[in-house]
Image 1 (cartoon, rainbow, N blue to C red):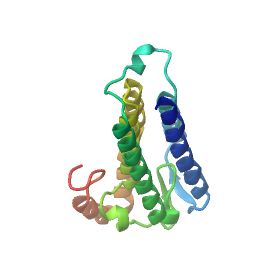
Image 2: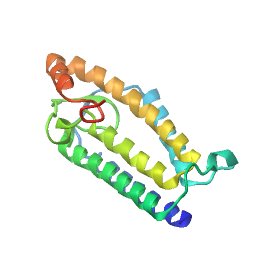
Image 3: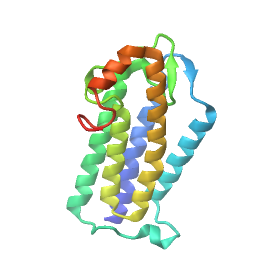
Image 4: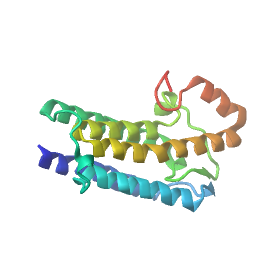
Length: 189
């Protein structure tokens, strides 16, 4: 099963990343962009997390099995990962040319509040975190939890910066939206 995990999950994430990067070619021009240092740190955290997820680690304690592996947890993790990534894709398609990899304000930026954005303000982050949780569940090792924490931290900081910029850009309209729609988990968080 470990070999199957080592092939199926990376393939799923690679297909997602290829799609994501191809879609990045058709976006509006940025008017304001987050600093390069924060973008580089986020990429570094994601690369480190991907390495933890993908390869047994030389520090043996990181490979500690936290729960027994089995087909049920493997396929549940796969389904959760797939659902999370599909939610990201739905949000990305719905956002259209307003999307960007970094925190930006686009020229003629629009506030999108329909589709997945009616469920949560940051559905791409919700989908990514859900996908990561599914991957952790299927792996069942401490290195997966470490990878999740490593990758979730920059998502949280990016979310906070994006919230600040959206409030500055859209003022009371965004405040009203934020009052109606939770950031990451519908009705909860």
